[in-house]
Length: 257
Image: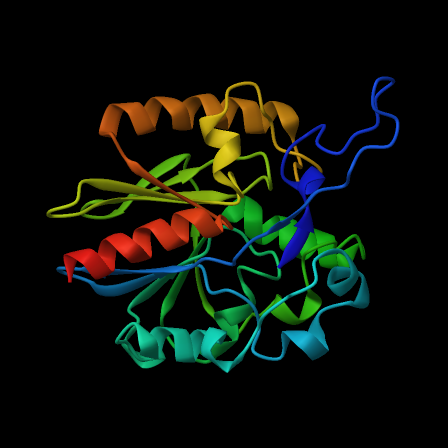
């Protein structure tokens, strides 16, 4: 997607007395999801990307603000999983960071199955409220799917499986979940989703989340917590939409192979 930087970073592209006509920078971003091969559970999916027919089912306003510059068949969840060596039917659990249209759309592939779908209770409630009041924003009514095996998370921090810890990091949405994974040979990874859309928010002091921010105080509190966790575990950060992180990890993986 190509998105105005102001959505990610507060104050970016803003008019100032010294710069009354700023250049409105747009940033190319990706939509990231991940598969974790757990030694006891099996493949765990973190986030699911967009619906297969997003071009037809997204509202016109979403396409206007966040146009997809590239969304081909290879990017559909089933094909992306296939490229990673998995079938949809092999996934044993799904963790949803939050239920916006670019993260929860692929849940359509798990409709009618008994695959557990883990999401924070506040996120499930927020989705229903947003749709019921027609204040949906990035929540789509079509994604409000009761034929899924919902397993709500109620705590701030939950060790879901051995080495897999979920944390509620409010700010972008009230119920946003991050997932920390301890690997056997590469240390800890934190899948931060849209708590940090791009690396700048985590790595540059003084920046806060832009127009996408739902709760500035909540985001800042979660940010301090995440800074502490990253330092404590020397964790590799994976941000929700940062192309550079995706490319770096892909290059590392190819070198390792």
